[in-house]
Amino acid sequence: MLDLVFGLNSRLGRLQFFLATLVLAVVMTAICVAIAMSVLRNVTPANIRPDDILKSSGIIAAMVFFALATVTLYSMRFRDIGWDPVCVVPAWIALMIVDYVVAMKFPAYAIGQEHTGTMVGAIANLVLTLALLFWPGRERYG
Image (cartoon, rainbow, N blue to C red; front, top):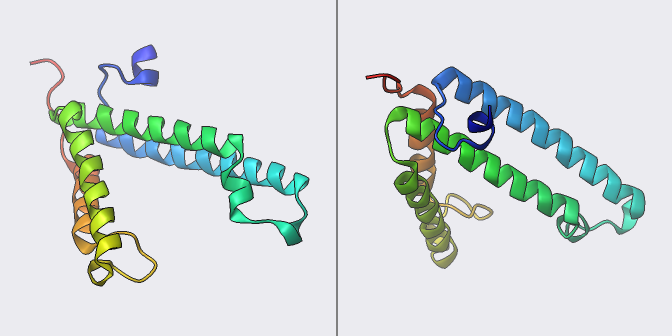
């Protein structure tokens, strides 16, 4: 059971990954709504700023929880595919950081004026997401 929660050496199939991702999205939406409602209770709506919500300790804890849960899910799925998550996840994060820096440094390469990524980063995300969803896993015993 703890292997599934912490993803230490467990694997996650395609359907399990898809359903776990949906559950995580619903849980995070509920957490964000609860945090926003608690911040709105303390601040009048006319004076609300995005910084008020982003600086609250609840939203910071929610972001850390979401990041850890997402990396755990991805690692479990990468392990099932047969890829080493110790190599793939940092490479994916590094690619997204480089993509962000290129989009900020050269706005002409960005997808749009309000986007912080390029088409290369978008395609890389799409390919890796499709691989996580549709790439068959290796046999568990053998």
